[in-house]
Image 1 (cartoon, rainbow, N blue to C red):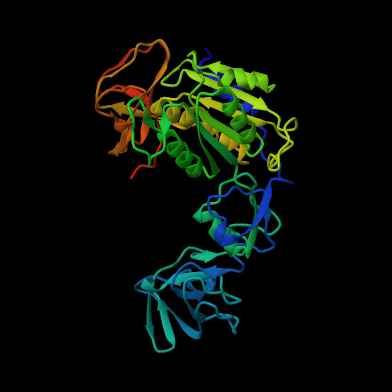
Image 2 (image 1 turned 180 degrees about the vertical axis):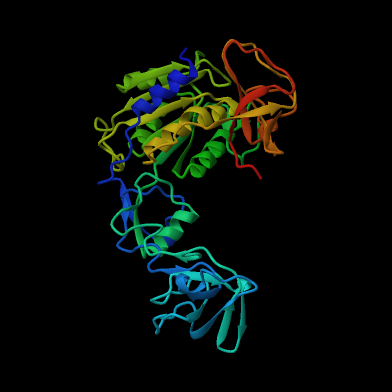
Length: 426
């Protein structure tokens, strides 16, 4: 069994990120949120585009107001009012000022803005009551960004702030990486769909739905291929179809040491390079990771990224094991494949445990629960009930996994535990 950190590094070494020349598409800016930027953005605009005011007030010459104070205010003539979107018509001369609003263009001759709270106005005259700092409340052209430099680098996820920056730079469309295609199939003759009545010994294929949801949340395209019985020929055909239509294949079940666990044998028959067969983690010990090329298989639907081999994950069949393995080991691979330049691995934070956490210490153990932020400190509460890999029920409404290292058998109340968020804090 591989230690978890070694398995993670090995998996990431097998991932070939999307090609910026081939695995891209151009999208309208309004459709680009949560996509990965495939090419750097360089703007020909300065930000700000021109000197402008950061405050409602009066544009003045600092030389005129540098000696004023409340008992000796400086009187200036107002020669112009400059609202937003207006091009100033006057050059400010000694003894003059312009009424200016936030964001408005600074008039020539003025170098400082006095906020209106520090003034007194009557008709077309204004009295400056306090001495401002030189160039106060002036945003200078190019202060935030100079034209010709990289505005946004490739390999970042586009969220609302980045979309706003692109809009401000007049980028109506943007080149992004395509979404990874992830084929999902469930193995096991005991599995039935959600619409079928349950017979004795049957279970609902919840993994298909859970993995599809996780894939979609990761920004990829889930391809749900359904359920495959424990019959080698059918399973082989399903795997061949999956690897010829997807960048990553996720199967659940069939990777342990039971009499009907055929996945590893079939992968070997297909010429796969099997890199991992088991990982020292709990839940999630049975895990097969392999790479296969689709070139040897005829298909009317070629692999969307034929240059790179397909990455195959044979996940455990137990529902909790499948989800925990996805969060810990599959998600980093998806992030790297998608073109993200960094931040592939889960981000662990220190939290204070509200209850005693226990493990047998033999494998790296993950306990699911909920994290909250209390007075600036993360606090972790494990889910109630049995932490069995088959207990899907108490995984609901959790948002995090607490990690106990190999050899760590207990974390007392109030002690620190490392946790990774699986959902956003609300």
